[in-house]
Image (cartoon, rainbow, N blue to C red; front, side, top):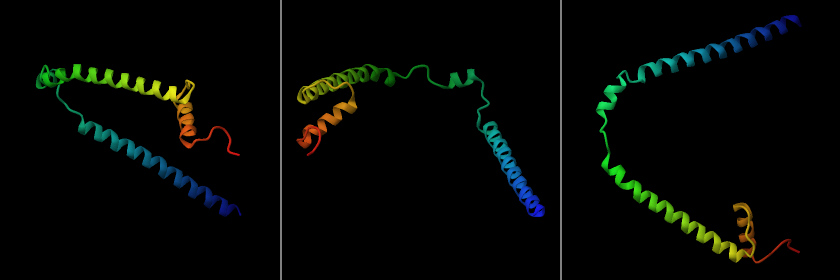
Length: 112
């Protein structure tokens, strides 16, 4: 009996040891990959390589802001219309969806 117990403990110890050895090996591989893939250029050289200003990006900022405002306004109007159709102003999207499903199905409350 003790021989089987000792064999089981030895196998468990070997298995746990292999797990920790592999974890340490993977950690070492990741550290090595980080060292190999990081750039060795100084920040001044990287800043000099990049253009100072991107004109196309600045042109689209105002347009993107205008589109975002228009989208938010249309969503607010659509929500107000849906809430008026539902009868009461729901306090959350979850309640609104449930009420709209009830209206769409033509039932309200329990089915009986």
